[in-house]
Length: 97
Image (tube, rainbow, N blue to C red; front, top):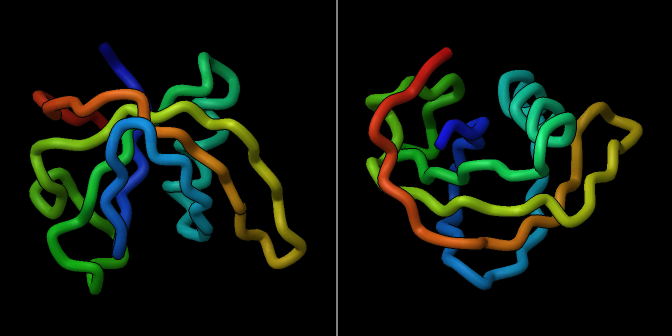
């Protein structure tokens, strides 16, 4: 399965969790927009260090949670508030840019 990746700085999402996330990084916003045009599925993966602003594949853990986007709200400051629900745990085998 191929899904857009949303790196998370300070939270780990598990299956069946419903959680709001605030997204501001340009790559993350593009990942959300891509997921919305497809099946509203996005892969949430925790960053190894929350201080990394532009995480590469090596900066992310090898497991994440496939999630469904329940609601997406674009805020006036350009950031996005997204409500997601974890579906199931997945292993990240390969990442593409």
